[in-house]
Amino acid sequence: FFVGVGLLLAVGATVPVSFFQPIAAGSGIAEMKVYLNGIHIPGLLRLSTFATKAFSLCCSISSGLVVGTAGPYVHLGAIVGGGIGSLGS
Image (cartoon, rainbow, N blue to C red; front, side, top):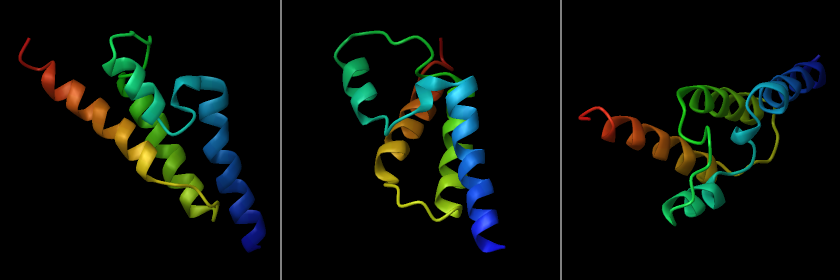
């Protein structure tokens, strides 16, 4: 039973990233370094990327996969910061 739940959560973490928002794959630190160096990556700071990355991170941690959370949190924080920064314009 527990293996099935873990497998279901792991598949639930990979399907949205694989099929709907491939930019949300990976840790996000390398993408943020590229973006801060002036290279624009389409879709990097969108709300849909935030939702996909947050959902997939929650599912992958809940499934028991050994993943680092620091990189995805950097990407999620950059999306929040970019959204707050664009409110004034």
